[in-house]
Amino acid sequence: MTEEQVLIVQESYGRLVTSRCNVSDCFFERLFKIVPELKGVFGEEFRKIGNPFFDCLGPVISDLGKPEKLTPATQNLAKQHEKMGVRQKDYPYIGEALIWTLKRCIDEDMSEDVEAAWADAYLLIASSIINGSTLALETSA
Picture 1 (cartoon, rainbow, N blue to C red):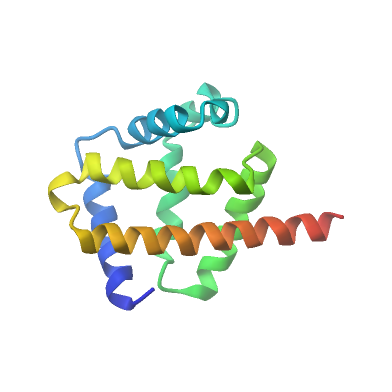
Picture 2 (picture 1 turned 135 degrees about the vertical axis):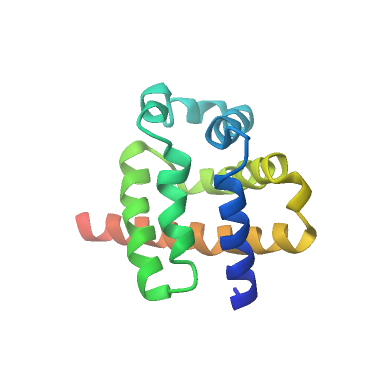
């Protein structure tokens, strides 16, 4: 990712946080429509503990331009997701739900550049999570 893309993602994330959209509900509603079996992974109990969407994504977005901080953050997410039962094959669907949610919640600010920056950011984050999950599996074996 370029520095410009990192700034685009971080700025649009700020707009997402202050949007009137219920981002977490929008995201999970779309995710469950795409992959209904993930409802068992990200069920009602999970969604009741604060705002899981922002709780998970916020720290990662703030560290996006800092690889030395991003890797520990995504490895932590990898361990959490692994315990919850998120599978490697689920990440493309999570990304699809994320982009869909962004289009709904920051619609007037969702230019092609913003969408491309988020797609690249998600690819970087998901790859790092998957690698962290693989490392976690190798370490626990």
